[in-house]
Image (tube, rainbow, N blue to C red; front, top):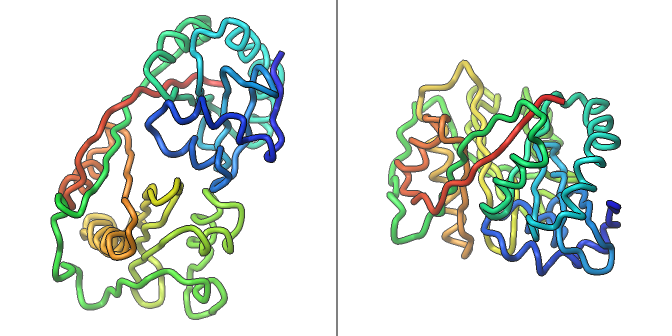
Length: 273
């Protein structure tokens, strides 16, 4: 049997989530970011599946060899989650485990699916390793500025809907983001053309999410806005955290140019719903 926890019960997963190394699942369990949690036992979960609030996949935590959970969660995915996901417009079931023993479990419980996998790199940046950029190498027509709540209220920003949609990908509200997160953007003629925000936050660790408008890519705007983000982090005692797919070569390149060091690589799995 699989049960969905009420948000007030998320703390019951503290013990099993803290065994992992990623921050997304921890951010959801402590209530920093939105999400849903499905467990084998409401009072004392041994295993759980977290559905990230931004709908960007599922995270399995706890005991990967828990047969009762593994059998139950497969049926629950087929009978409940798949339907809900398709209604939300999702076409793929994407999952990761908070430790590598989940890999074998995924291949077993989804053995009848056309299962594909990818590698995801995780980077951390320390002040000692940071390759500081004194002067931002961007054209004078571009301006880098800290994202504030006033930017969502003013009519001067021509595409403020980009900022709002990006925030709401990860946070329950803009107010929630401005209370817990950080953001910087590049402006060009009153238009946001690149931005870097906190996607997930766990304690003092800020997970980075970056987006640059396609027509402005290749101008090193992402690199410059990341510098502003990490400098603010270090000035305020925060740690920047970055993860991206191994095949996302531009993102990996920017991380290394700034000084991020790869901490580890984990495997993700997906199949079509």
